[in-house]
Image (cartoon, rainbow, N blue to C red; front, side, top):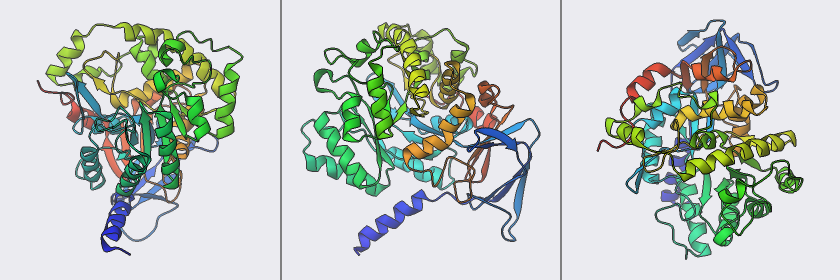
Length: 451
């Protein structure tokens, strides 16, 4: 075997291993059981060398974390549409200073950056977090977008160019890819090559308008997940998907066609319901600014946000939101597979409503419960089902021996009240314990440009 290739392979394997930490015993409280989707009394949870184990093993010293009867334990949340992106004056970058802390403090221990603006910078962030040099969630590395959303994308890429791009980032350790602004021909190649690498593909697609791809077309190609909306023939290819969505009737019998394709293909929908409600400034307790999120912005960014005015896009999302609510509930009742993602970048050129980053996961889960999906199901989506959808169920998603030792601990039972997830006070990543309040305190005034 080529020595250079072997070294690269060993490096990738090392990056996929959890960082070493002390042995930790978590006692008391209640623990989420992914089989029953409910909380059971917790006797003991063991984390050794960053992984869950069945019982005390060895003579090494163990740190004990004693919980009260008001404490409820979830496996670390997984965000399958996480953005570290900040943009201003038509320039964009991935924030590695505040966003990682905000994600982790909110109980998100693994993030899939759904298309990276600065892949190399995100790669460096992943290494520093994994080495314990800075706090943050696991980065389920995606590499750059596939499509015009990537700054380096060339519409004239050949089949070889796309396959080489997949292979390059797979060799670097990417765990999945996202398409946005892609043609059907390029998407088919991306899906085929990613599957050869045993990696998943998701897409922010369109209606078929102006050479775009309708999700129904992508499902026939074998795409694994779809972002934002179901798609289907009810989206007219003569107009943009959003313009078509605002006119869609969630009770239209023809919607059954696209739902049946998701069921047949075992494909997942990442509805990102909460972000559309936030952008649409929907009047609901789900979208209250319960965390005073603007305090995490730099003074310059905060002035920009506070001076923003609603636009036609905010008005459009207000019309789309009830459509998304109705279609998601219908999809759920039909047995559709659902994942949880936040999709909350900080765009200082466009008003996206309240919130950014990790705070969005609580709104996303609450928005699902608000339409009638049981809280236990939603918690399952954000943990075990997200892991299954991304192909990492052998490493994450439940509190099981051999999986990453990631937990979030909150006050009160979120099955009874989903808003209890907002009371997260302790997060454990790979056996290392973090105080949510301290993480958030250290992120104040750090997000966004200084000038």
